Length: 352
Ligand code: ATP
Image (cartoon, rainbow, N blue to C red):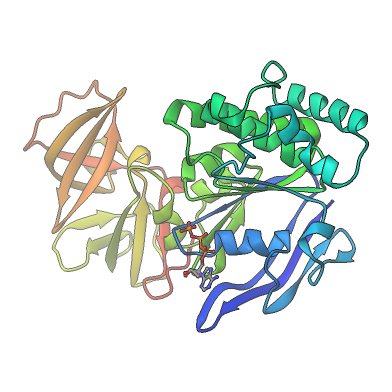
């Protein structure tokens, strides 16, 4: 079932938590809502669930306008950060619970619950109580319980936040597997970029209530539509600097005499240039983008991170450790044309 949002807006008095959000989530897709704290992710999820009703705008499930439809009539499964299991009930009874509420006969409810438990791989734990399970196992129970009614849409609100790093990785792969096996449309809220980029068909990056970019993870990383997206994604963060045109491809760093040689002449007199640390490489003086003195060197896994002083700012680059660099060396960094991003100085919008 496709989900369509049309100019969806949620106002809490003065605060616009969700601002004219328009998008379509395709049938069977897993879409992440990503963004900084307070950007409106949870509010969007609450609007999809029907627990909140929007100030204006519409929500369609398939052809049906559900904007004013109550939560229990929307055929939605929800998974929360804190699992929200019933502590006094066994795993089996927790999973059966939504069906029993719907008056599904006990035998059928039991069969369907066992089937779900097998899908999420906890069928060996059916008799346990939630307190006797690990965090990852509890989250599996919560997912089984959310899916047992065969909902049309699965909503996941930071489901991995309470798990340690290793379990987070395991459970994010599991969520993706289960979602694909069931073929259900899913919306996944997270503030963790790595989680969003790795699990999703599509990511919606939000800021201050509105979608900044709605695209595949690769597209968002490779072609950020504005400076906010460019700087939100990536760790270590993208290098950003303002340059002013001197002549042809020669630019200079703002408030400095430092030269920057761009691979092309732009129409802009001033522009913000962004390059990710991993897209910079050491090169010879004539073919480089910029030169500077090495301020700092550290080893990160199989790469070496260097920080260069460029004019009155500094630039980070991840370089091959085969270069025997030392602090104080002068070196030149280059980048491929496709990996250099330009943004308008005033609006922050991408210009290339
Ligand atoms: P987080 O990652 O911190 O959970 P979020 O992106 O999910 O943040 P929301 O919880 O959707 O953000 O909140 C968006 C904005 O709306 C915030 O400024 C928040 O303070 C405000 N807000 C959310 N719920 C309410 C409410 N019930 N009443 C008033 N303001 C609210």
